[in-house]
Length: 173
Image 1 (cartoon, rainbow, N blue to C red):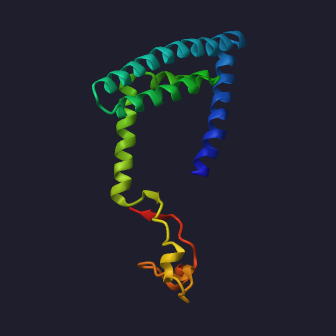
Image 2: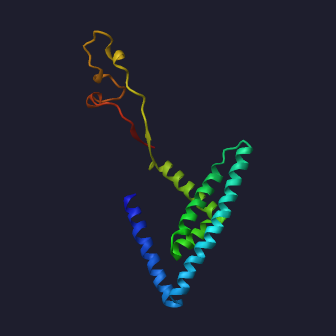
């Protein structure tokens, strides 16, 4: 995950810089700046419009007594598109404008869902679960017991585990 984020935060600005230099060399500095400002303004207007549509769709789903999961995903992608649109650059503006199109968002949602479903079937998804709290000191051995509360028998625990306090653990699916 760290490597992907590193690539994202280094390669995207480099691509943006390269595109801006190339476009500036073709059409000039002034028109390039106007292009970036224009796509940002149009993108902000479209993001506002699509965000309002998503908000209305969420409200309608709630009013109908349904969980608006799909509409909330669309709203999240509209917010991400808005962030991309206010980021100066041609590449991010193009991707942000594409994400404002509902069919593109629906395709992206389908792709992410199928990817997650495939990872669950393969067993590549990890969940963080919190186990039940350990028994209290009183239940460890009762009053007058010589058994230490930290040495409580846990089902399936090794000898080393019995001496360690219980924490949440990662379960491979």
